[in-house]
Length: 165
Image 1 (cartoon, rainbow, N blue to C red):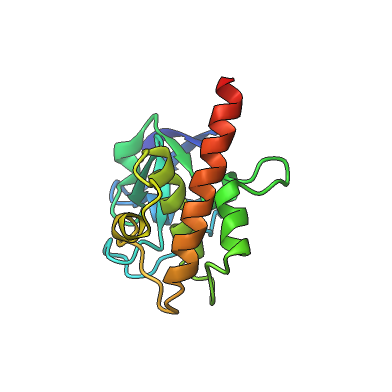
Image 2 (image 1 turned 45 degrees about the vertical axis):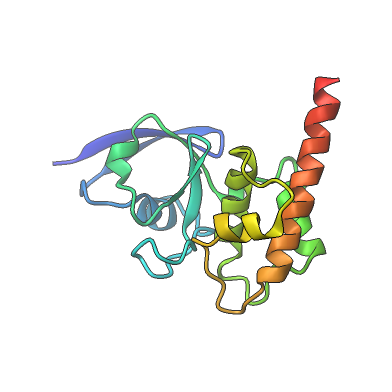
């Protein structure tokens, strides 16, 4: 028995047939749709390498059943840049060397985008570190990650003020 789900993924509506209702969002993205930016690290929701945004909120895609997300809007790292222009968080990660091996980087970036969108980032490095603690980096690039989140928070806040004015 198959199940059909409709998802808006990176702005495009997708109709997906699921042969197994236990298919996770991560497996759907990587294996069925070829969106390999979200990584399968621990597959237990402990490392954050699979972080994506669902309806604007950050989640661990390895823990979410695709069948439970019918009608949801999913944003992956592949959908962040607009017209070849990097998202401010992506640009800040490059500027602050917020990555080393790069395995965790997509999840870190998606978590940072969600954190900023949730309005929790502020300008306190300790707060950012705490709220990003669900994303692990084996290379320990945490300083650069924190600096990147703080810079991107400032850039996005400035853009929001310009838009409001």
